[in-house]
Image (cartoon, one colour):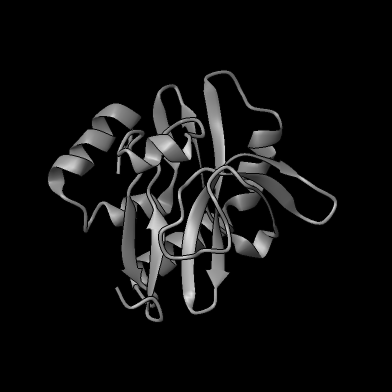
Length: 164
C-alpha cells in the first residue's frame, strides 16, 4: 500500500475497547482497510459525519434509553501516513476531546492501542453509537463495506447491527 496516496481506516466494530493482544491475535473483529486519499465516497461519508457531529455530541452528553457505545473516529498523521482510529470512550476537554485509542495502528507509528489521545474537532472523521442493538452513524464503515469481502460484511451486519 502506498501510504502517500492511501488512507487506512479501522473498521473496529467492537462495542468496547479491546486489548492490543486480542487485536493482534485476530480476535475482536478489527479490520484495517486501505482507501485512496481522494476517494469520493469516503470524502462524502466524512463530510456527512462532520455535518451531523453537533447532534451526535448533544446526544452523547445525555444518552436516551436504548442507546450506548458512543464513539468517535479520528485521523492521526505520521509523516506521509494517515490512519483513522476509533476512540472508545471519549470525553470533552477544555481544548477539544480526549479518549482511548481502540485500534492497533497499522500505518502510523506515533500512537499505540490503548493510548489516551487528545484531539480536536477537526481531527474527527466519523462517529457512531448503538440504538436498540443497531448501529447509528459509522458512515465511513458503510463505505468500507463496498470493498470488503461479502462474508466479512455479512458478519458485521449480523453481529453488530449495521443496516448500510
